[in-house]
Picture (cartoon, rainbow, N blue to C red):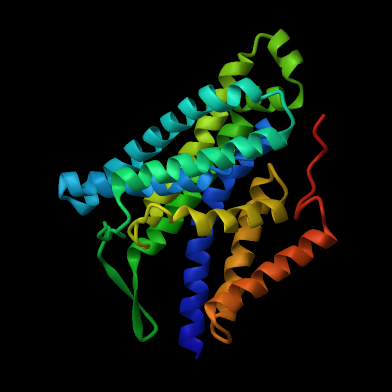
Length: 292
């Protein structure tokens, strides 16, 4: 029982970092652009599919995986740029409900396009690092630990860019007051495009990291995007630290609950806990200053 609990908690902690990475793409786009990107789940699936294609083409699990860490986010970001310029840019000054409906439709377009290209059969990606490390009386895949560390490093890099770089200052300036930022010479249109592309790229990165652990499917983004929205809503849009904390708590609760109930019931209990928290603290886990 104790061994099982340790492994469940370890799996939950590992997966929470990937979930946080995906959720941060959502919170980055909404927190700074006021765009609710429902298509984020489809972009996550595209990132995983691109990773599978690259690994199959190279025939090298480690080399192909490392290459896909660079290529897949770029491909997904480029898809995001095209989608933004063609569907979201014309309505960017409209209320968020317009972008919500638009990205909802974009989700189905991208998902069905992936189905036509990738197919409906699940595909498997070999672990880029097949090493198993001893843990208690069992073994645990080293890749999962590296996956969590990679996601954490990406999140730390994003935080640094947002808070300690010139471009991060530009992003916050555009968020606070777009007109004033433009008058000060900040390229607001370029900043908006870069933020959206970065959010999409994070979805692609999360898909690449998850591909060796999960089966790659054209619809794999449906379930996880729900979890990502739950995390973002509970943490508060635009809240990086809160997103990490809520993702960890949400996964840990599920990990413990599945030892006592079915996985579906465990997810329902975890969701109920998060919803109760949202009702108690409606501004999120860590309140942010209201945007002007």
